[in-house]
Amino acid sequence: MKLSAYLSASRHGVYYFRWPLPRAEDHKRSTVRISLRTKCPDRAGDLARHLASCG
Image (cartoon, rainbow, N blue to C red; front, top):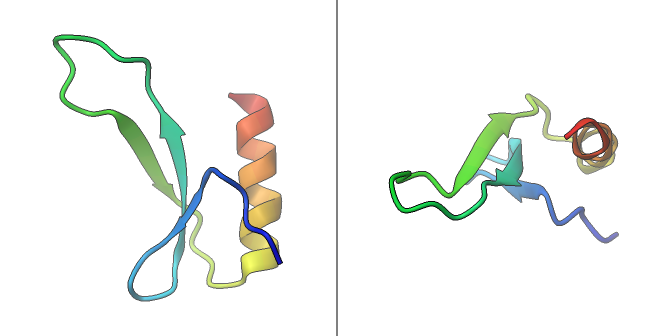
């Protein structure tokens, strides 16, 4: 199964949604990570697709 490009898993198996931010000189953060609060890859993929379409 292929996971979304916006997904990353923590070392505990919880999936996170990663959203890249535009490059700026004064910002230190390059991505925003939001916990999807699930360990199921299918559910995480559905949530990530929904969040990516909203963004």
